Length: 252
Ligand SMILES: Nc1nc(=O)[nH]c2c1ncn2[C@H]1C[C@H](O)[C@@H](COP(=O)(O)OP(=O)(O)O)O1
Image (cartoon, rainbow, N blue to C red):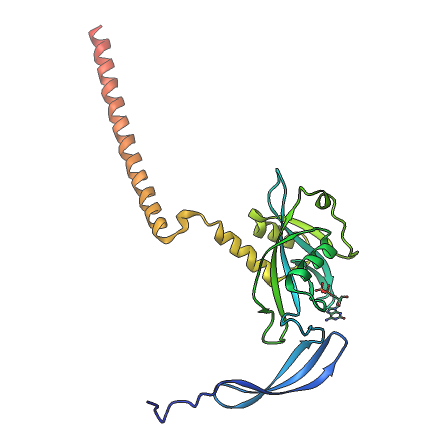
């Protein structure tokens, strides 16, 4: 049953997209849409011009784990100068999907180009948005394992001159990034830092679970009480034994 005072709700939808400006790589459109209250509005939207017809994703990001005997597992990262930000960034290797490529194929190609490593795909995300308030830009993140003991991965040769490869141990990922940020003028990609925080949560310490934390506090309290009683008991014993010995000496 509907009430007369309730708001009219509409399924929001795009009405038209009009080109405002266009370059080789990106374009700016005015998007006319109907909002959930039924009002017609406009939005300034950035789009890439390069999206291929066979995919809904513009590009791929690659979480590449380098696995080597007697080494900690490392995440393969890239550092490069990014003109839109005017500074260096710390990112997962990434790139645009070329014509006819799947996300998996693009990921292995970009990884090889940017870092020199040959990997094996172990997982892929659905198509995900990157900055939905600004752009329709999308990506798929591909999880790749690299066998670092493999001959071709021992001395990897990258094909890009201005990209530095940085290896960061997975179990200290957030700390190592924080160290880098303190040391250098570099901006970290949001996806990277969120992944780093997720890893810290994944390697959580059990006593940080609320129920165990409560138990831990109780255990600490009980330990303190027990220590007090123990010390009291020991001091009583030592006093008794002192008096026993003094009695003995007296007897001798
Ligand atoms: N927005 C862009 N402006 C440019 O002037 N050039 C751009 C833009 N986006 C991509 N490119 C160019 C730069 C490279 O030559 C190619 C391919 O980039 P790719 O390696 O696939 O992606 P990134 O590593 O994320 O730059 O496109």
